[in-house]
Length: 181
Image 1 (cartoon, one colour):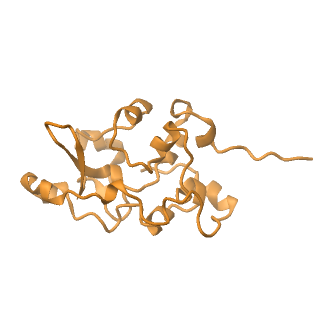
Image 2 (image 1 turned 180 degrees about the vertical axis):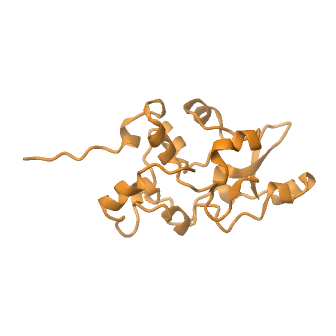
Image 3 (image 1 turned 90 degrees about the vertical axis):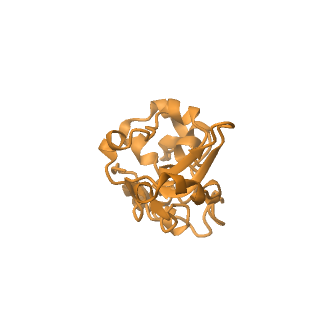
């Protein structure tokens, strides 16, 4: 008797085909999209800062009020398949962007590694890198916090496979259970 292993949903479905739990589970919890970005009025170029959204939990790298985020932060972008295609500032490692581009998730993504801490352990998340939250800094000082690190991945994070094998399939399955961001 031959048993087939089903392909993971992110390899077989488009963003539009994902159910709510699958959609939410795609977020790797890096927090890079929750950094304040500045846009040049003339060129429309985007610059990242090391300033976190006022709702960013700097340690957990998640929104502290995810269900109400758009009411509290009106310019918070709600990711949908359409916005994933339209915005160009999503990190190159963003799972939504990767799925849209037909690429696989990195080894450190919790759906692959089975551990939500891998994104922090490998240094992809903003944990320990946020200088200040936006409400704690005058607007005129934002330009002094422009950084380039959110556009790059740390060494070892760009590989498609880890140096050591990921955790067991059972741990990976439990990591896929939906959790609020």
